[in-house]
Image 1 (cartoon, rainbow, N blue to C red):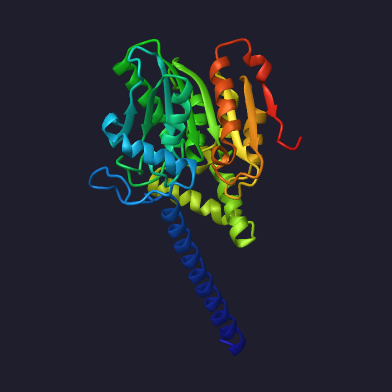
Image 2: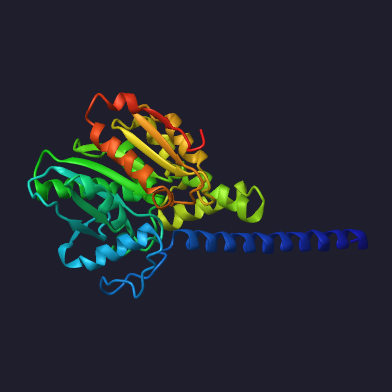
Length: 338
């Protein structure tokens, strides 16, 4: 065989070997990304306990302090999810036990469920209501090895709604209020078609429009690159290893099927989930809707930065949710500078 041909074969072999090594490195990195993104962010504690210290410089820290100061008045509920894992929740009964008003508060990624106590105070300040704060799968005391990002959680929340109906009786009026990943969860719960008729309204603070676009946004922000092909590989890995279809985790895609009023919040300085994602959701909702942009607020910090405005919007939403006056509230809340 001519020397040139042998040399060509060697070069081709080396190139194939190099390509194989590159593919192995890319695939291995994609696996690490998938596990980092979807694995449980914190180990499940042996028992539920308050944190050693609470930063009370924010409204959420002060809410947590209130929660743990009144922990004896909070009940612990649990149920079994559709896939057999045990889920936990905090339940705070209303002052008037016979009230039918219920608020279910859904935390975000890697949040302690007790961070939602500030919102519990907000709702209970003017409206006597029962409050349920579920621990999302792979968070808090709930079992689970991977994060549901609102997709699997939406089925869990629908089950929690049915569960609370069995505990409190029929005729409930339930409002879902979530932030970040919890906001995506409540939107997907409302748009899934599996929520019971007791659902009266949805409040979503800083939701992503789809997990696919959120991951693309984060990749571009961190690496300044469009990594679409790489993310498709991550998608394939999560589907194979977790049974999780990233492309179906999309509040925007189901928002047109929501049949109850929706109130959206988002900070204009949100660098983690940009506010245009709430705009995308808002534009697809066909039910009565309203969006409130909090000027200068970072991710999920709208209530902390503008508590009075946030509270007023909640009051308007609650007071008019079953009233024809809601029709006069539909639309966009102007920014402070408008």
